[in-house]
Image (tube, rainbow, N blue to C red; front, top):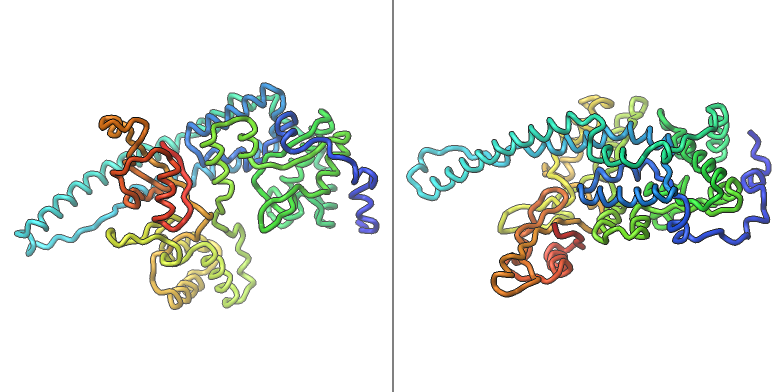
Length: 453
């Protein structure tokens, strides 16, 4: 297709470029149409039941106001990716059954009281580990039996009915034509997905659904998404800034002059007066940088040296030696893996590349990394500028001694299951969550956010 006067085709009504915006983002969130992206539908798999209920409550309010829509293709993408999310949860739970201690028996020490105490402690640990393994097995059995009965799908079934799911009417022929035009001319959305082997057209189908909603209801619209891809939004310092103007103008023409915005879920929840702790948790997770992964490994045509270099680059962009950024507890004699881990180099490399790269090449890559860094247990790279913790307060002890309204901390856990309670004085009386977070931030040397649970 000719690119002659492409701007004239993309922006056919030049006079409207300087027209006043129909509605601000805030006003559109309060009164306009809300459309949920696939990543937004999948988001509640990252939160607890209480926060899921609060998110769903916000959706219910929008549905009752006839302002909530889910593109049918987003529903299909949710169905496809739901099993992946549950699989990740299943995998993480299964790892909880691993033994944490292995003590060799030395009969020569049997008369030493301290050694006997150690043996008894180990017996109690083994007993606890057996209980953990049995409980993990029970939890895995529950997860395995989820079909459409996982907590997120069950919560959605109460709201996402035929009035909310919006099915596009554009046919496959016109969609394919639109996709080719946008791909050839690098026009949003979807051109960044051109090389995907499956569902490359997914974003474009959702966009045409948005255009049809605008055409039918002639209302301002906010697309709730935390994707931040450059074929949807402009980015400043690698952060989403504003929707691409091509999308704003295309929606304006389809909707009769109305506004199009993109916003994260946290901003919508805040407008809908969702509890502050849930908004903060969602906002923190939105900024959480997931590990990069290669969905395709086109290494069969590459040289061995370039393949190894690409594999090293991937590994070192996602993992680092623990001394780089982990807190170290000298009393406990080890690092606290707040970014995930410890990870074994060999296990990670074979999990990622085992089906695409020969074992010989993988082992050469492992050797190069170990020659440079030594044999270490690896940490995930810092995935945010802060960590999130769950703080367990004890109000009763303080009440008993006349310090009503204050609390002591009986436990602190991060998202990786690390117990961080030793980083504060558990005998101290705190009056607020902020005080605990301040002490943790000072002790760990990194910003700490969190909640009382």
